[in-house]
Each structure stands twice: as structure tokens, then as C-alpha cells.
Length: 199
Image 1 (spheres, rainbow, N blue to C red):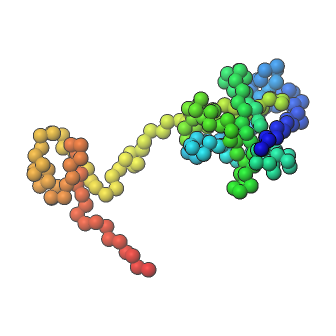
Image 2 (image 1 turned 90 degrees about the vertical axis):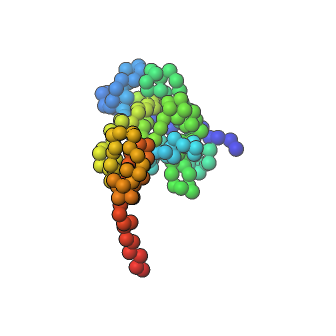
Image 3 (image 1 turned 60 degrees about the vertical axis):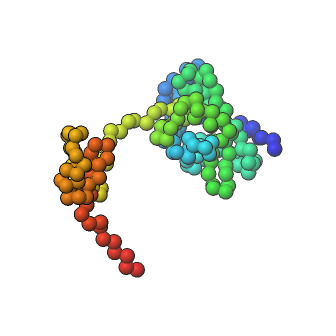
């Protein structure tokens, strides 16, 4: 099956971009316009080898002509690496999947994921300058765990400082319902919670 290559017209905004609207500077004095960004999901960086482009951004920034939209091969979009000064070009197959009614970037995406070491929660951003497209990514911010997320749900923890505590003493101290795990005594609840299964 032959793949259709379609030129996507970005020229309509070139005058505005050169006149001072938009983000950082591109090459040749053009200003970059931030289009959108997406926090990648586990399926975006997993074995499916595709990035789902949110529909409203896809239709606004990457409109497909009738022929490309109906073709499973879609079109090819070329992005320059925003951080490497446009030195590296990423070619992605971009198409519309009518079965799921979604716009996707497929061929070439898995190589980008591997090269950038993307993981779920990282952000991919897209911008343009005249007729040139740029892609960038950044790591997700590390979030320290909260104490509430570490709180035990079904056991109270009784930490024994001495590793020489006899198991019989530990069991007696917990009323016989104790579990020792990695040198920590976990006191089990006296009664399991009652379940009301009335239908």
C-alpha cells in the first residue's frame, strides 16, 4: 500500500509569526508559536507504538485533507528537534483511525520514545515557526510521597527496635495476632470488617 505524503499548509500564520506573535525564536528570525503539549500516558509510551493526539489540537494544528483522512497510510509530518537547534528531524506517520475516531502519530514514534527515554507522565510539546514544526519533551516533576499514602489500611504497625526480640514475645505482645515482616511486627485487626452483601 502506497503512503500518501501531504503537505500541510502552515503559511497562513507566517506573517503573524514573523511580526512578533508567539513563543521563542526559530532560525532565520522566525518566532516559534507554542501549539500544544500532552502528558504522555502509559499506552502512549508502551507497546502500542503510537501517540494519540487530542482531537481538538489535531483538527486545529494538523488538519488532514479528505484523501489523507480516508487513507490508512495518512500523511507524514516532519518535526525538528527543538533542543538540538533543528539538527535532528523526526518523521512521523500521522493518520486518522476511524475505528476509534482518533488522530494518531504512529511510524517513527517508538524511535522517538526510545531516544528520549520517555515514560508515562513526561510531557511532549509541539510548536511551529512559519512552515517548520518543532517537537520537545520534558520529564515529569518528581512528587514526594505523602504520609497519608503510606498509612496502613488494615493493620497497625508496632516497630520493635531490637532485632533480638523473640517471636513468642512479639506474638504475645500483639495478642497473638501479629505478623513479623522484615523485622517489623504488624498487629492485625481483631476482627475482619463485616461485609453487608444484601441484594
